[in-house]
Image (tube, rainbow, N blue to C red; front, top):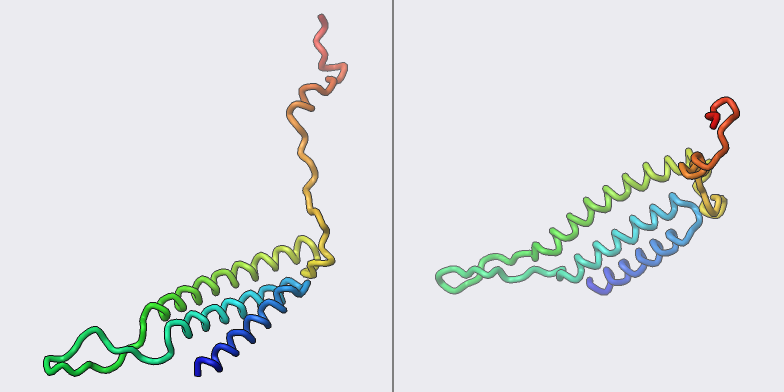
Length: 137
């Protein structure tokens, strides 16, 4: 079972990296989510698929029922919540980028997107004043 999941993790990681290398930003976001799922599956597999024996024993010395390791489950649940938050943020960010730039293709976006330069206060002080505002000496 571990070998099958190892191949699945490798396949998901490969698909995630492939999508992240695509020029379209939505494909990048989907690749990021797939790569996150591959990492979650890797953590789940590293936490052992089989059950473990509990630390408690009964009075006669027999073990209670087998238990699952809760630490990988807690890590994966936290990673799923964080991944969902990042996906929501990415969707909103890409929506605003599409409104501002008109495209979500990274190759079609301008190299530098700078706003118009603001006037410097120093330039305003050094600028000659109009004739009306000059004070006679």
